[in-house]
Structure formats: structure tokens, C-alpha cells
Length: 121
Image (cartoon, rainbow, N blue to C red; front, side):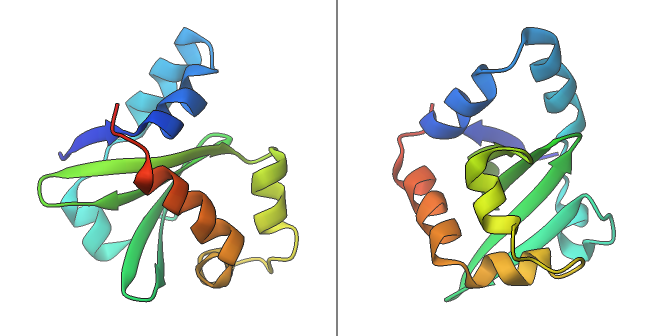
């Protein structure tokens, strides 16, 4: 299991939830290196653009967008599937092509860059 680090933005996004919902989501968000190598679990996705690799994890109604660094996972964004920002990304996506479409979205990468540039919490 890799250590999980939330940046300021993703920590603020998850802190808006009630304590029990936070605990349930964090209990589901377990990332092992073998999960990321195979990506056979449909909860995980891989998004790649300009040699940058980002992973997506679905937990209930939430999506965690993160990258794997040397010895830990850094979470850049935690978005609810019904938020306006998440809707903007997904409104034109065909079923099954979600990760490929996100990889092409400039708005998505702008959100991720905001997360990358935020200080880790």
C-alpha cells in the first residue's frame, strides 16, 4: 500500500463531506502498485497526456484524480460526479471512453495543474 498525500485543494474538497462519509471514502481509496500496473479493476483509470500520467479512482459518487510519485500517491482533485466542474468534463463523453476524453481536455488538465501546484497538506 502506498502512502496517500492530499494537496491543499483535494483536502479542502474532501473536508466538505461529513466525517462518516470521509471515513468511508478513505477506507475505499486503497491504492496498491499492482492495481496501477494492471488496471483491471474498473474503479481505476489511466489518463495520459504529454508524458504526464494521472490515475482516476472511483469511490461511490466521487472520483479521486492522483499521480504516483516515488513512494507515495499525491491526490490532486476529489470531484463529486454531480459537480459543475465534473459535469463540464463528462457532458460530451461517450460511455467507455471517459479516460481518453479526459486526457484530451484542456480544462481537465488545468484543474489538475492547480492541484499539482498547491502545497501538500
